[in-house]
Picture 1 (cartoon, rainbow, N blue to C red):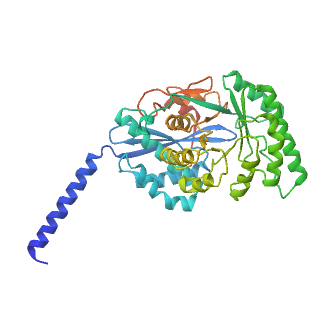
Picture 2 (picture 1 turned 90 degrees about the horizontal axis):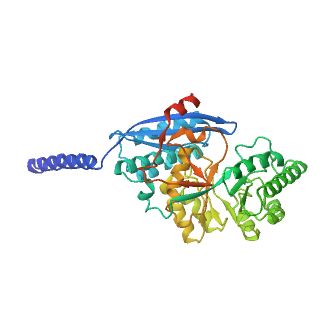
Picture 3 (picture 1 turned 135 degrees about the vertical axis):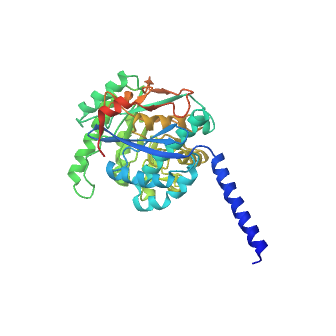
Length: 398
């Protein structure tokens, strides 16, 4: 190489480096630090809350709850965050792509970690731009987000009386839709047929009692948590048909998909599911296979808000409605609500009802649900932050 070519190459490399540095600077704030808080809730698990700080001094919050062991979850979040630190608050798609390897190794833990970190980026973007997150996703089609009260995480007495007691409280608090999972505790079907029958009868009895308690005009949702096979699931759908369900959720496991599809075709009520599926690649065969009528991605574990938007687009093309799963903290609930505001095919959002009396105070401003509706403000980002005092009262070591 001639000297002139070498000098020219060095000059070009220097210019390129400076241009890259300038471009990075022009991209705005970068991620600097991360705080994780484990908040003790109840016998069903804790909340794992994230707060990322950017170079402009703003913070963004996220929810990594219910993804698995909190200590292992926090370790993986910190590991993934190490690659995100120093990058732009706009690097959402980069985070999505870079998480592929972690997901292959840690599945649910990684999916929840990435989803929560992604939430913090959107909150930071909204606060930096001075706009609500729903504006970043195409604008709000609605500002009131209908929710249903999932009473399952609150009920300790798993009898008709126990479920009815909490369902009545939810109705008294203004909810017009209630969900329960009355078949939890059922043994594997292949192991103990008499016990399976006993649990099935008990669960149906709980559903009947709650329907009677909330009346015919309110919506009743039943979650089976995949405890049934195709044969027993079809029989269950027949038994529950007189209850006029809003939907019947996750009757069988998603594998094989043909079981859910057969049940969906035969059931007299709408079916719903998808809470444990990650990403568009996981949801595409689920939607194309006609597994359910209502698709339920969870912003805490499906990959985040952008991933949920993409999944909802596939569902919209298939003529299906979307109802994000999410027995979340107020942080996760608000993140999901902002996205729900933008979805043409949105149906209803999950709310974990009655877990703790101080739930609403964990964020500022406090969570407000009136007559089952979350009213979105026009505050920047998600419009919330941690309530330091309340989190400190319930925070436990990781």
